[in-house]
Image 1 (cartoon, rainbow, N blue to C red):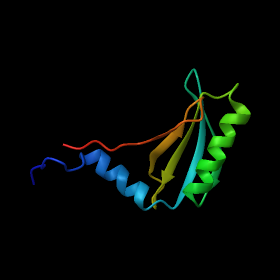
Image 2 (tube, rainbow, N blue to C red; image 1 turned 30 degrees about the vertical axis):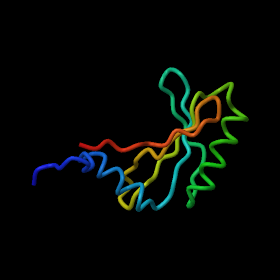
Image 3 (cartoon, rainbow, N blue to C red; image 1 turned 180 degrees about the horizontal axis):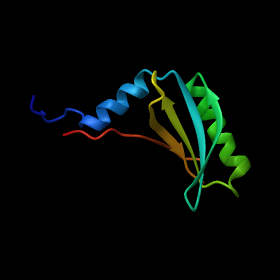
Amino acid sequence: MAAKRGDLKPVDEWEENIRNNAQYYNVVGWRPGGQKKEYQRFDNLIWAKAYAKELMKEKADRIRTAMIYAVGEYDHHALVGSYDINEQWKPVIPKRW
């Protein structure tokens, strides 16, 4: 089946399926140098976003970004979005053909 203009690209479609059917969400902090640390797990995206925003306020001196990952049925994960050092929410925008 050929891709049509406006269709999600294959990897983005797979990740979007994980985001839409998430079992839970992980909040992960990233520090320069590539180090990541999982901080908390939530059943609800709203709670995960609130926690990630607070995490950036409290630990801005130690982490650069707080990322939220959706975790699917088989422990596959997909980035939902992140808060940067200015506490700005940056959602993932899937790519289309």
